[in-house]
Each structure stands twice: as C-alpha cells, then as structure tokens.
Amino acid sequence: MFCKSLISTLPKWIYRAQIAKNETVFYVKPDCIFPLLCFFKYHSNTRFRILIDVCGVDYPSRKQRFEVVYNLLSVQYNSRIRIHTNVDEITPISSVVSIFPSAGWWEREVWDMFGVYFSNHPDLRRILTDYGFEGHPLRKDFPLSGYLEVRYDDSEKRVVSEPIEMAQEFRYFDFASPWEQLSRNDRA
Image 1: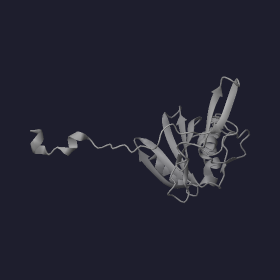
Image 2: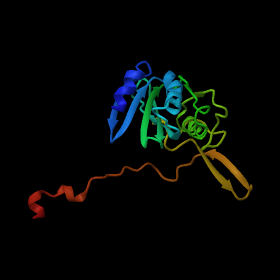
Image 3: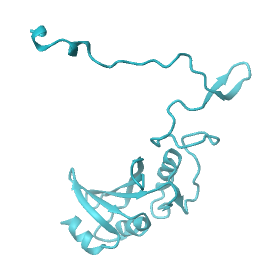
C-alpha cells in the first residue's frame, strides 16, 4: 500500500517500484535523487530521517554501468526503503550531504571505489586509497594484479612505489574434483 501511494504521488520521480524481502525498492532517475530524498526525509507521512548507507555496484555490460543504492530508515514508522539509480562514468549525481550529513563519507567511498561523481559535494576526495592512486578498484575492469607495488623499505625508512615483479610464472589450476572422474558404478 505504501509503495502504490508513493508511486501515485511521485510519478515523475519514481519510474519503477517493487517489494523485495519485505523492503520497498524504488528505481529513480539520477536527477531525481535530491528532491526525492528531501521528500522522504521531511514529509510527515514518510519521515525517513536516517541514511543507513550509500553504496555502488558495477555492471559493465549495461549502458549506464553504475548503480548507486541509498538505504533509508524511518524510526518513527519502523520501515526501511532502498532507492536505486543508474549512471555512467560521466553523468554526475547530486550530492545529498545537505539533506543527510552522514552521506559525505558514503559518497566519498563510492567516488573512490567506483568513480561515480557527486556534484556539489563539499569534500569529494579519496577516502580508502592513496591520494596518488590511479583508477577505481571496485570497477570490474580494474586490473587484478595492478602495475605498482607499494611497500615499506627499511633501508630508505619510507614507503616506496615500484613496478610489480611476479615471483612465479602463471600457473594453470585444474579445479576438477578427482572424485568426479569415477563413474557411479565404481563408487558403489
């Protein structure tokens, strides 16, 4: 009922809704995030006053490959909602720090790990990686081995970055179970 009433109230902001595991999920366009979250926080029938987290997901096969997910909690009505929006590498999302101050850290994490840009963010800089780090590590196309190795050098008494050296050649691992090679008659 809550889901249907919100879709009828906010048809231009919410383009799809569903209930998954007793939680309402809304799918919105990126330019509607700010007014929608403002509505959810301040409207007397919603009162979602707590932003639990903001996280990102990378789907490289999609045209808009990044999905940004906002999880909200209403203590007054004892309910949770999840809001999904999709963006590409170039499209910015409006920061919601002015509505939910805790979003500052979450948006910085999504920026650092995925490269999703939040416009009007007061302090959008890296939070989990080094300042000179290149790339965004949670993107699916990020190289697994990396190009640089960062380590502490005792002789120089500082952290040094140098090209990575592989200690061994590439090995092929056969993950087949030896038990699957026996026929069913041999096991009995």
